[in-house]
Image (tube, rainbow, N blue to C red):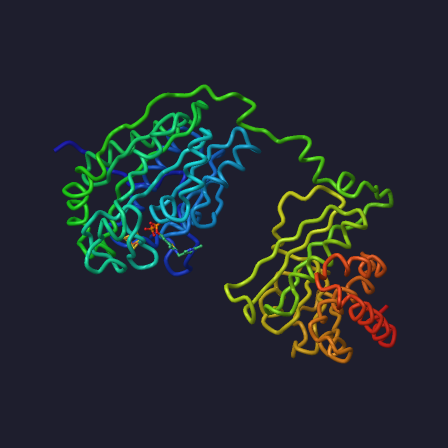
Length: 473
Ligand SMILES: Cc1ncc(C[n+]2csc(CCOP(=O)(O)OP(=O)(O)O)c2C)c(N)n1
Ligand code: SF4
């Protein structure tokens, strides 16, 4: 027996430790025998081989592979359900050298994301899509997917998928191959070691095409989901070989026609759009005062408190004062009563991302908002809290706190929903970063019900009286 030493090591493109869980940093969250683990291992090893780790951006989908960003030591973006090809397109247009991997399940790609994938393929975007087809919605517990074969029992088809009721399984390779633009389309499988090796070859070819700017590449990987198929890992792989690979999803290369991508379609930042986004062109006014410190503002409360409109009020006012502005709303699934927050950035410089992770201004409209965001405020930041509803003081001692009884002031004037206007007026008056006169002017732009404009203006004056009385301005 020769002296063979087998050394097991992870690809350099995967993190050596996964920081998702404190008590287990070595294993992924995938079930035993899941194809995601195998597919991701193959992708990581090809990234290593092609030496593209530093310029790879891995797009995680919604689905069982939602946590891929804990595993890939590359650029990472977590996309909304089904939207990876659209996100990939955005990155392609701005970073011409990035290697972009959209990794998607069958629910993600062939269900909710069908439009995005078809159009990205039709445009021949120079991106790579790995389509993990396990013929079921894994993450949500085993509902029928667009690719579930006829007769297969799932949570939503307990008697088996029916052709007349549910339609036929969709062959994504066949569908995309009907378009002219794609460069490479292949269907592979993880059923046997031989097929796994073939899959690696396809992954390599797809990424190599992207590196060489040969156009849109798409690899479908038939992948086991033992948990939702209710099979052992071995039986699951045998089922792929016996059932899926046959007539339903034949393994083959559907397209191999490398394209000549025009350099200007790889990165088209349109100068006219960039100019449009700068303050001068929006406002046709110019701010020529001294540089102003940017404001990263988080306004948080419950749905119905006017949190998003408060953000708009700041955004409109800041625009009027010549700032570049972004406004990003975020709300829970409930229209009313759930949590809501708005991120607003006001800056003299162009704004790269509208996300506010570490606000230097927090406006907390209720208790949970203070709990949630207090620790994210930067040193020397500001917390303006609605003391009518927030019951405690901030624990932070390195930030300045202003307690304004916003709900009470608004209620007293007969319009409880205007607590948001109280808070923004206070923010402007206390910090001076916006003129109160501008806020007053913007109220008309933001409030759709003009009826309430006068009442809100009255509330602005009441707020100013309160601040003067308390010597806060
Ligand atoms: C907008 C939206 N709709 C629906 C869901 C619920 N959802 C989460 S994952 C998923 C399907 C996942 O299936 P698939 O893409 O096949 O990935 P898998 O989990 O099998 O890897 C669905 C429908 C959601 N999170 N967001
Ligand atoms: S449910 Fe299925 S797809 Fe999801 S991790 Fe488990 S085996 Fe994989």
